[in-house]
Length: 389
Image (cartoon, rainbow, N blue to C red; front, side, top):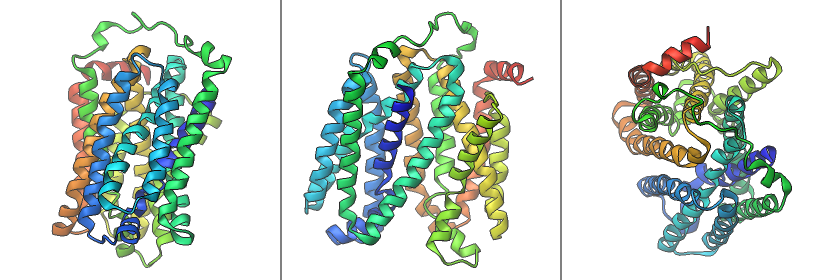
């Protein structure tokens, strides 16, 4: 059951990321639009729609089982993806595609659904695996999208996207008919009184949301212009090399998960050390020397993987199975808000201060994240120290 849902997550992420790097090419080929601002506005609209989508479906999931929701939403998303392929109107594309994102965003329910059928002890390993799946899905989606753009046509990405949505629909329908789904409903042990009340700081979900808002904004702000920055500091003028350097954090995340698996190392909840290493990794990426940039990418990849996983562990450790989807949707809203803020500001910052400024903003943001963590989770820090000694 759990492995099946993880495969569903991979399919969903690949489908979701197919067109992300190639919207400029798509808008130019399909609608003759070359204005970067319009592409930027569309990205912001997508992000905003995801912010609204997940909390909405999480509320619905309080009354209706996640897989029942996915059967219908992914079917509708697939039909709308085919409409996006066929439309030639720019206005219609905006309307149809944003409604598609609303329904497609329901796949995020799979994440808390997987954790709901896992025990608390399995959460760190499961969250780490899901984080790697998201990384790999993003890379695989970009590769498939790139091949489609180069050798077929950017519009055909929506056909592949629709296929991914229909696959998710079929997998959800299949799972609903299996005995494993019925047996998995109550696998999570009771959580009442598992954790003393004093470990629930007031506004816990809000505090994690605000803290990870800064974390995600800091990580995202380095992405849009990284390839341009790498080509500026290195001797290589190759999109393949730039893409490979860009993907280093995803590769590092996979290696860390593999290392933990072969060493059977239990993921602890320490967050302070990853944030400190992340500050160093981001700071040295701003040094315009290719070797140092690569070292910075490696350090940053390890740090951001550990930090994101452990913030998720922290959230689900203090949540309950019946609240997983809603609590995670609230935190996810803040994280997307951070990405939205970064996407709006990065172009202006680079235009005024150059290609190195995102790394300066990013390491300062990681420092702010560290400060917020120390301020918000004093009680939890004591628990973390006891765990890791």
